[in-house]
Structure formats: structure tokens, C-alpha cells
Length: 187
Image (cartoon, rainbow, N blue to C red):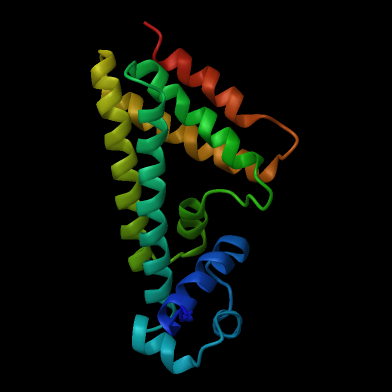
């Protein structure tokens, strides 16, 4: 006989916050988070120190998973740096096509959290630095003359693709961005 254990309040808060913050943004109400997680307000403060701490932890967890997804996507594309870089846009196209796609959680958080000192901004900046490093490494392997600058350009394309995917669902921004990315890396 196996015993099923229900996730504790911390895990339920993280699950509810991940879902609600992605769907409704970081300004989702505390009451909605507590109700969805089925926890008392006290649990929020005990585990995260408040809503800001919960937002930071949700973003940190998502950043780990999303950075791993970039690495996995590029690894699945083989050894050719060009193919690895362009695979990113194929993957973004798949993500945009999913039901319930609401855009980039990091961009949305950065835009909604107007206090430049909010701790979530350090998480989003750290995430972008990690993705930038992955892209730059591929651009170096490709022999690009300005790999850091090209990685900056790739990040702009990624942000734009995710934003367009959320705001213009009838288009194919990933395919358009892939073409632009191919131009960036064609000698």
C-alpha cells in the first residue's frame, strides 16, 4: 500500500504562483495566490517573506528550467553552431504555438515591476546573462567576428519573437526571426 503525500504549503504556493503569475502577471493579488494554493497568509510570509519573495523564487525556478531548455534545444540540433543557433527559433515557434502561451515571463515581470530595485530584476538579468553566454559560445564556435554583439542581437530577436507571439497570434514571428537570425550569422 502506498501513501500519497500532498505537497506542502511551500510547494503549493510555488505551483499556484507559477501558474497565476504567468497567466495574469506579477500583479496578481495575494488573495488569489493564497486561494489557489489553499494556504493561509502566514505560509506565504513564513516561506517567502511575502509576495516579492514568492515572485523571485518563481522566476528563479523558471529561469533554471528555461535555460536548460535552451541548452537541450541546442544540443538536440547537433554539433554545427549555425544549426544550434537557429534551432532556438524553431523551439520558440513550438512554444508560441502552445495553448495558453502568454509571452515571456521575464519581460513581463521587468515591465510590470517598475521599482528598479525589485529583487526580481536581478533574477531576470541573470537569466538573460546565462542565455547570452550560451548564444555567445555558439557564435564564437561559428567564428563570428563580433560574438558578444551578435548575442545581444539574438536576445533582441528572442524577446521580440516572444512578445509578437503573445500579441499577434495569427502571425509566425518565430519563422521571421529565424530568417533574421540566419542573416546575422551568414558570412
